[in-house]
Length: 538
Image 1 (cartoon, rainbow, N blue to C red):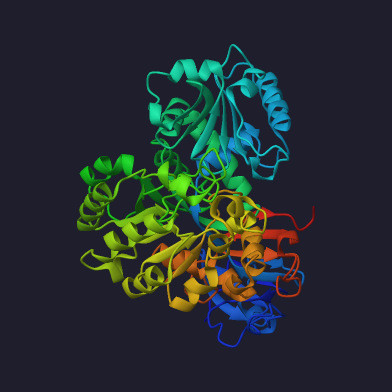
Image 2: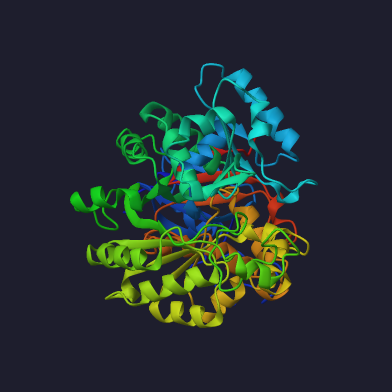
């Protein structure tokens, strides 16, 4: 006799993504037909998918029946590149992400200072000056208006640039590397990049109690946006403990793959951790390292100079003379040494590489490992990959872990136009070319911001039409693609019997409004068969 299910999700338009062949109308982003209407769940696992009439026989006396009300049901979103602690800081501290000017940032920081008078540091996160009328970084003088007594820090959206007030600069002065501190007339402007931002991150690192506060806020934010699993780039030493404590207490609402910052590599190797070790909810992922910085900070490492480099007319001759092709955060020799050591220990590598020169060194290091095809090493961002690099990534099965929301800077007259020029701007974030080359593609947000539907929207409506994906392709990169990047394709990424019951319910169909996917609301998020976010009646 068939046992009753714990929970039935009925009355939905279920897209399983189990077999998407012929399930999208090419490049037009038109409507797609659902595969099923109902899903049955027992002990967190899908035990049946089909028509409501075919699934109803699994209803028992104690079975909970959840009516999806004709809404779209998809596999839960797996965000393959997050910074959950930082996301929590957006929620707990001043959120500068949509600030429209320097003055707006200052006002928000002043409010934060007044609201939290007992916090030692006044912190704000996510400012993006590229869209301001006065497109400049926040300076020491700006932040001194917030406080002349407390240290004030505003972190740029790329997290490779931070702005400090005079108190913060003085406090950290001896630790800040001079080459990464911007100066004018010999005086620091308050803007720091790369290694200097590492000093800032260390100074503001939260304790265990605050880390839990930040992560809980971040997970509530994520589940409300349909995220059921994250690959968290863990820098804070407290975060793994918080996740594991929450999981042990049955209070972790999301699946977490821990991509440990390379600062922790000694501890990871000493404890014998390997990729995929862990529990149903918390697993070891990759060792995360860098090669270069960001385009916004002009620290992404390029073969050719930045278009707006130098203090004069920005010509390439002048820029070349000043060495304006970005910088190495981890130089190629150091990268190769780390790659060999980590790969030999049975760990996946997750390497930040944005500029074309940085990607070249990263591909060369990863493709030379002993068994690259099964290691699933990853390149994070891969924004300016060349044709040759994509071909080599495909051969070595190196995962392209990309952020479609970065297309927000790739429009004409946008940040990338200024930094890179028209030709390089047009070939940034080559989503279509990545898929066509056969490179495994996983989508993440980098928390800029964390919002899968916004990312899908940018993938489908990218400024360069030749790089656009279909709706189904974009959704798969945020579901099955993320699962593959985390060795989870056997349990996550599609809605099939035997898979874990992680799903998201949407208020509208992304196929029917492919030009407005970012406006779609998430009605419900389910992890392991449990409803962790429910907005249906709100």
